[in-house]
Length: 301
Image (cartoon, rainbow, N blue to C red):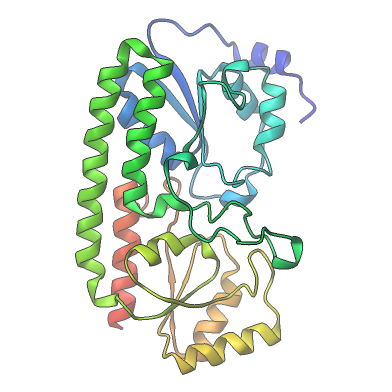
């Protein structure tokens, strides 16, 4: 982006933030929705990306730079999920409040325990493996409960006058996530132990939480395009383990996923993994219920 920040601010007609509201920018819509629930009317919240985009490959836009320049707080997923677009934007934003180490730089991953952390580190031979663990932790509602409480603490430091309200709303949101977790557990109980194949490791927190084993991946390694040999091996595994469901997000290579399903007599199920911009995923609860119900329907045949 060659457009200067000064020019962008002039074009946007940016004025100073008035009143007691503080500005929050979340890298993904799922965290912006939580920020609105926790921050209430004391927070003005926006998101950079939503569920229409592959979260690994978000294309930076000039509007992102404007939003970051104005922000009092930045909520990021962390675990290197935003590494392809956020560091340069932060550097160009000129906003000290949201730089790493500042109170307004809120890395949400510190509130959860990641899965799939490589024991011996990661290198390019392993594909696009995240060296700090699987970054898609939001797909376990228990993690979202932890984020609600952690976000409330972070907002309390940024907005001390509203700290008690943030804490109260954060706790209420956490309880809702735990109730949702119990609901999904009941819905998915018949699927426990029934293996699935998924395109990428995006959904693994969800699968691990509800005891749905992953028999294999369409990608031979994370981010690596499958070839004939890897697909033949995958299909052999699917037949051996009687896999009936192939799961993919809409932005994956559906032509390949569809072929794998057709070759093995399985059903291809398209599911949302992030909120916003797609049917059945307007809110976190709707997204998770859509994901669970589509899997349950496919498993029933």
